[in-house]
Image (cartoon, rainbow, N blue to C red):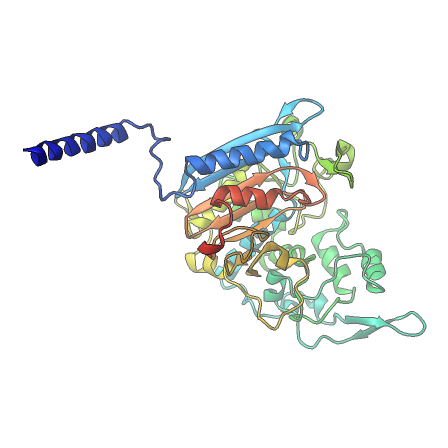
Length: 429
């Protein structure tokens, strides 16, 4: 009899618990298997708020989707601290190198059309580059010593930053030639840019190093050359407009400028100051001849998320197909051979390789100091400390917007990643 009463009591308790669970709100009943659960939301909120409260940044916003549903949005602080304009999801920011994956996508639409192969020489489509040389130093008289490249620069080299281009004016000897060429001057057309770059020696032989630089600007030129259409028009017609990314632009019109975030600079003492608008924004207030592939776009959180969602859905969003699944897979696969040992700052991103205009995570972090992330993730960021990533394992996409120079010296990206996935635990890796 006692056992019978015990069974009834246990049954009653189980039914009671089930009833309580069924009455939970959608927020309360988030799946325990979800990456972004209530605990993660609390972590993200407190993390982002702490960076604003500490004065390290003026404002920040973040948007996360998981399994095609919005699971997180919040904004803290100001888009313009001095004018007391809050940061929000409609704030326009400068995305700098987050332009690059968009350019790579435009290029790969032509790849899908059979217009080129990745291992085709660049010079097949751009004869300007047929006679490019490699810089090997200076002779006793201070004249540059040049040699022929060991092999031709390929389009694959352009997509993975192994083409050989130098980007820094402080490279001994070569730097002054890069500075004199001034290829990325906004008054140049892409064709003029390419001509100047083809006349400037390479920093290293194609395929021998990973060196971040103007490779993606040359990709934009290649899109223009191969398609026969101005790059700005091509990317608009084949990527941005089909995805509904109307506010991802090179030019910010007058009536939208009140939403355009200010830019902030942190000095060596950690003091944050606003850069003058005439210094930080004027590149976007004019229609310049140069439509760079490696930088130059502005966007909003929701606009850029459209791009990320297309990628996590293997090239299709809302019945609009930009790329085939196999092309997205190709872009998100590591293309760097182990023989390419010199990789500039790329190792600072974690256990990564590089695909087509994306860093690609190959292994989990091996220490608490490394950036957190999921193997198979592909991502990139921007000079003003913006960040996005695509996590196909959890079908998660994240976009983080802030406007801070120099690039993330405050550990914002790592802290945000830790907040999303939870802090590093050695026994889980």
